[in-house]
Image: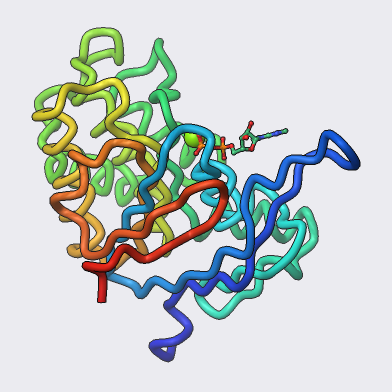
Length: 232
Ligand SMILES: Nc1ncnc2c1ncn2[C@@H]1O[C@H](COP(=O)(O)OP(=O)(O)O)[C@@H](O)[C@H]1O
Ligand SMILES: [Mg+2]
């Protein structure tokens, strides 16, 4: 697999919600590229288009214009079923809030997708254990989400997103429920996983305090992406 096949390239992405007088242009002409092993933050205020952009990059939302190429696949050309497969196999999402299953333990939350898809085996269990270890929550593996702190829950959600060994890891406001110190630790763990496992990591956030462990920062305002002056 060539280097370029591992990259994410988005070209002139646009998303318009609605039509006519009530149309909202949530993302306008956004272009970016990110390499495997790179952890990029997109920072902007609430309503600036962050979640919309992330959803298009991960094939959850179809763009009104432009295209997204991930690992050599132009996802804008995929049909619905192909996009579902792309998401399942190549993308790990960590959404705002945690979305953990409340009556399953931390470990079971990592194993829920493999068990639904009939892939639960020793290798998957070992993988879950390894991820919980790397994320510093191995000791909490048998606990329910309600028994974990916010930071621990977020680490479990990150572990779950990494279970399918995705090329692309997309993270939406991972620290919104955490204090500054816990938030920074969670972002550092994310950065470490992106490096260790050579993922394309993209995090969106409104919180500028969370930008310490990222390789590169892009800013978004009113749906438009910018590189701040300090960025190469
Ligand atoms: N499904 C939708 N229908 C209509 N407007 C939407 C929808 N989703 C988002 N928007 C609008 O698009 C803009 C960007 O939203 P969003 O991407 O959620 O921003 P952020 O994540 O930065 O807070 C906002 O003006 C929002 O109201
Ligand atoms: Mg959002």
